[in-house]
Image (cartoon, rainbow, N blue to C red; front, side):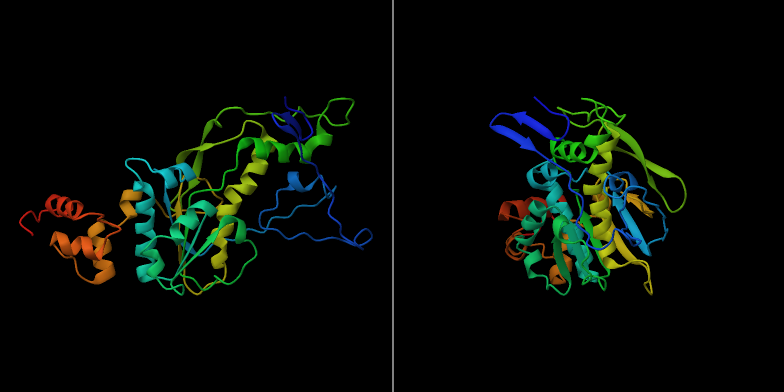
Length: 321
């Protein structure tokens, strides 16, 4: 059974979430200024009544690619589709190609980042060229401002129940029930997957590219969801400090999200991921066409001699030995 104010009773006990006003000493009689790139007035109002909201717009100096044929979910990246690990391997290829030419920051969920850190070839790239951070450990950090490129892998999307509990705690006194003073309906709970809603990616050349995004049917829950999901991805991009830069940097968004930024190119993963041959050539400056050599120098790409032979045969070098 589900309660209405963040109180939830289920198997194994009762879960409760609540809202507490921030402890700000000495601010009752003086003006208070909140500066937050992700501030959502409706979420802040329960803590600071009568808040005046002012937006200062700024365009990021970055050339932005976005992959839209993959959702970037943890399931897709960690378990794979179209064959075990296929999407993850393509993402590793994109990161490898970026780090070959630029200094790169990669951000994603903790589980995905941990797997990337253990990748045998990515481990060989110096930290000066490639660094990783998960979504929960990047806000407010300034040390990546000199990086040339940022790659955002996937999205942070907690279970709907967790976000619903947070929203219930935020908005409990706005709900008209049990004689409450509010006028809104109880928080809507979703027991199945979130419905997909068409939204538009803003394109620099004009117009928008439609993509389907999971959206919670309760507006208040969706506001909280976007703080965790969309805004966290935007925070990752902003670690490069893209407002005052001498020349535009690069950002690659690997996943179906609609962020508040302008995208230059909408692509598929196959369009930007280098082939296995290109990856070998980047690493070693040569592409062997002998199956044993290919397997020996790139065992992460060709796990067996037979797999190397099949790749060579499939790419027009059937007479190689």
